[in-house]
Image (cartoon, rainbow, N blue to C red):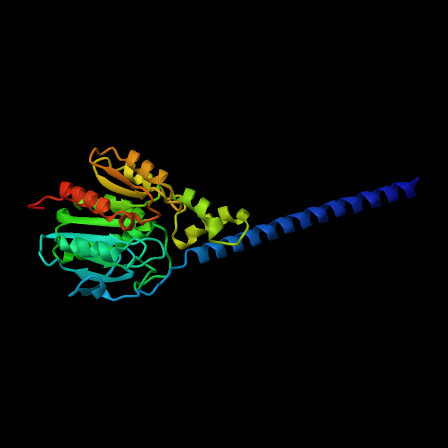
Length: 319
């Protein structure tokens, strides 16, 4: 009888030890999987936020001569930003800062910043073209899709003010990420005469969810982790320019959006316009235009809308 009890006890101890070992192995396996997921997510975020110092391809004379090579620090984090400053042949006191988009530079071929700058100069606007952080010849090695780039725009604004440009006679035009940057900086640009946002997203996470499959070969299970890990590199995946527009009811915005934009669908432009309660805000949808290509697709419509808005927002005298 005693031997039977001992055998039963031994079997019970072995079963308990077996269960405990299985639990430990399961915990170790889960921990390993979590660690692998975290490492892959961080690596994904690291790769996706890498800057792109794309060569300019042309020098400043492609827009006009003479021009001035300029540099200035971003606000807050003092990253060195570089650009070109142009003076209009017939000075009007008005000026424009142009802010480029994702993985572009001051030349910004898709948007055609060169031809737009030529037209602005001919209309009496001095023009500043510059490279955002991690782009062109500017410093930095990370882009953040409009999270930290407002610091760059504010650095450009500080530079222009130091050159004695009047904020009330100044306009800022941004496309794509640059448009989100304009909206993100709008709270600090209250004195600026006119803000123009071309092809901005309304909600960054929606764009990331749609575009990540086209920018990585990793399985989709890693996308949420990659988005979360992007915060380690300064990118806020929950950035919502639509909320920033809504928070500025006294600010008029001019929104452009391409009717054939599949990268940032036109619904984003509609959402941004609806968020602005200022009656002078406008949305112009350019039929057939792809992402940031409204000016190239229909320059006559683009320019007539742009100058009408600038004339409405920027005073002829004073400021």
